[in-house]
Length: 379
Image (cartoon, rainbow, N blue to C red; front, side, top):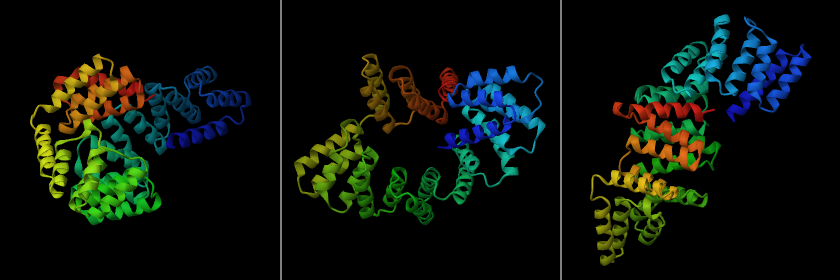
């Protein structure tokens, strides 16, 4: 939605900028409407020869380069605009976002901080700064920026979910509840917010609320193993053992963990079915037996990849992450999405997760490759 609004805004500005030059205006409209941004850029270059000093023309060239995926060129043009008008905070915003897309968080942060000196009410910048702080594991600044973003737009689901999550980790439950109540009241069907509510209620041992919200999520189609485990555990604590067993049993086999089997066994014990209890306690032991189990699942995934059984490989990698969030596993998942499944969105997502997991220096080759793929996939 944000990109659509920005495109509409820029398009309107460009039409206004060239309103008195009808042939140029008509040609640009055609290029922009058909998303032929590279052609539009060449047209602008052929129409306005260097040295270009008109800010509107330079802004057009910057935006068009950005939309064409020519991020280095876009940055140069935006910098030229900024050199002509250092009070133009919109240029700082664009320079920051360009560098964020390129993975240059430090440079992006510099532009965003400068922008906040000029505009201390920019919600998107606070949100971006929070994400940069998360990538840098700077907990103090994460909270500072999330709280500021939330104060500006308390109904934003992403920020509310993130901020409430940090409050829950800090056991500041009333603060988490206040944040979520506002956002949920504004969007009561938002899955992300309902999942955050489950985390909050689970942390407070409000088992009946966990069940109510969890069942609503199931009806909405959210059958994630995380929610199933939390709801199943809530059923156990409220002595609804049969419901607990049914909920845990619905979890797909590969996502069942040691904890899953433990609570199934405990439910059977509550029902005084000792033989079944013993069976599942043993399965819990087997599931938690080896400290190297994460690497075993990575090897299983590698074998499935060789066999071109990509879905099975992904399941094995996800199982591996349940036991250890190893940076290399994120890299392997990204590569599978990138080269085999051809899912650009998930490939981009997992390359970012890999970089954010702070891989060791010995993985420098993988780090550099991941950054190059992030840049390519962001276009």
